[in-house]
Image (cartoon, rainbow, N blue to C red; front, side, top):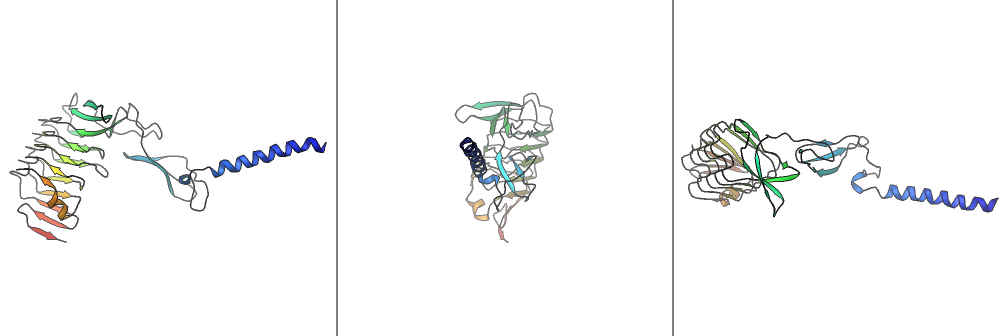
Length: 253
């Protein structure tokens, strides 16, 4: 009888060991500072990604970018991004990302929201002449992943007043004539990541305020093509450590 119990005891011991091993394999981001396993029932999310909050210790964990499907809904957390329907897109097969190509069926839209993802792929550029001459357009929201606004993208959008860049914007370039003749545009935010502003990019706008995400020195080093600010108002550039007027006068904080 004792001999028969030995295999059973060994089997139970092995099961207990495997159970402890499985606990030890819990990813570090799933564990609290004291080694407890985080517990969370739901995701928290924004346009950039999702995460969980532990109901035991309150720590944030499992922070990841969304994986959007064809309906612009994250397959992991279910977050759906609001965006303007009917726009046209072009797939860049080299990068597997989308370029916003045009206004499509949304021509009468006044508040434009460009998606961060389209059909599961990131949107990284607003293409040349995409919204050229859209006179009804009053506001546009540009997602954090857009790196370039191409030539004449918003040329002649006479009613455009508000341009919002979401999150920590990755925008690096603003093309030639991109916002030319947007006569209602009085304020613009330009991220510190921007390295070039094209010819006549903001000509014939009503700019009085430019909010720049970098320092005075970074603004001065930013490549600005000829007549980028032709016939604007007497704007002030507000940097992180000072201001610069249109005539070049610098006031440090």
